Image 1 (cartoon, rainbow, N blue to C red):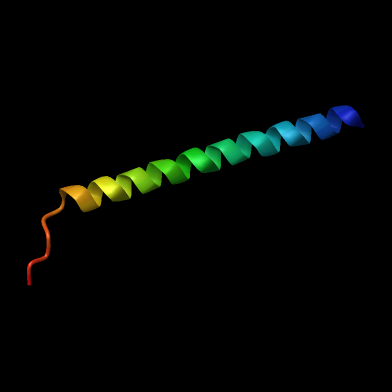
Image 2 (cartoon, one colour):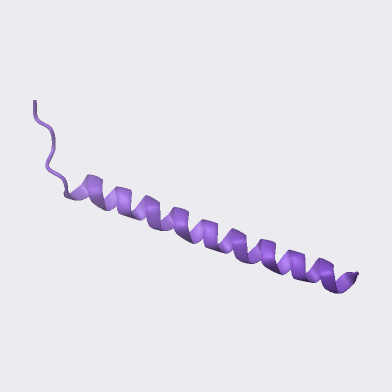
Length: 42
C-alpha cells in the first residue's frame, strides 16, 4: 500500500514539474515575442 502511494506521489510530482516548465517556457516565449515585435504606432 505504501509503495503505491509513493509511486502515485512521484508521478504527481513529475507531472507538476513538467507543467511548471511548460508554462515557464510559454511565458518566456510570449515575453520575447512582445519585446522583439515592432510597436503598433497607428
